[in-house]
Image (cartoon, rainbow, N blue to C red; front, side, top):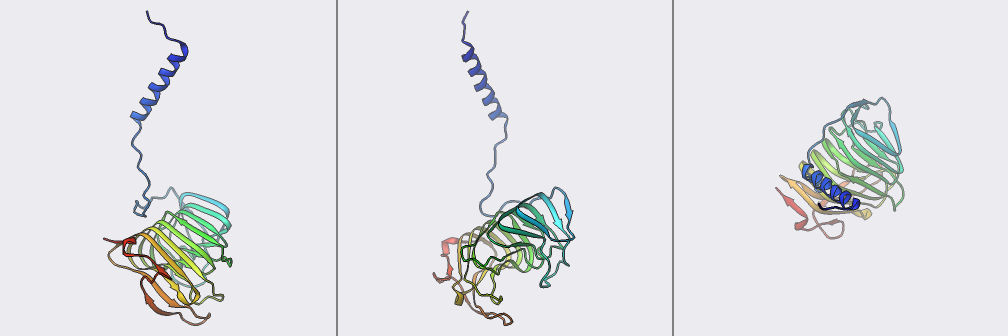
Length: 257
C-alpha cells in the first residue's frame, strides 16, 4: 500500500479541479479594439423627463434612456445627462428623443455608451481649460444627421474603439462659438459606415486632428478644414486632407473596405 501525505493529496485535488474548470469553461473572445463589435441590446428602459445629473460617476447598467426633446436638430435642447469635471458615465444606451445627449462640463470619460439615434448632438465637450482631456472609449452612434460629437470648449478629445453609422460628421470643433479655443481630437480604432466626414477642424485657431487604425466602409472625408469665425457668422470650408500640421495621418492609417 502506498501512503501519501495530506498536503500531497490536497495539492493533487486542487490541480485536478483547476484542469476541470479550464476544460469546462468556454473560450473567451477578446473585445474588439477597432469599433467593429456587435451593437448591444438594452436590459430595460428608462424614460427621462428632465436632465439627469451624472455627477462624477454613473453606470447605466446597459439600460435604454430616452425622453428629452423632439428628436430633431433644434438648437439649445436640454441634454440627457450632465457629467461633472473629472466624471465618468458608462454602460448607457441613448435612444430618441435624446435631446442634446451628454454634456461634459470638464474633463470626462464616456465609456461604452451607445446612441441608437443621435438627437441634436451625441455629446458636447465644454471645458474652458486648454489642459482638459475627454475620452470616448468604446460604444457607437447611429443616425446623426449633422454631427455626433461637438467640441465647444478647449482641450483634447480622444475617440477610440468606436463605431459610427449613417451620420454627417463624427466630430466638429466649433467654428463660431462665443469663445474661440484651440481644440484637438485623436481618433484611434474607429469604424465608419455611411458617414460623410470624420472630423471638421478650424486651422486658423490651431486645431489638430490625428487618426490611426481607421476603417471606412465605402467612402468618407477624413479631415475637413475650416476658417473659424466670430459667433453669428458661418465658418468657411477651406480644404480637406492630410497636411502633417492640422490634419495628421498617412495612407496606412486608413483602411477602405
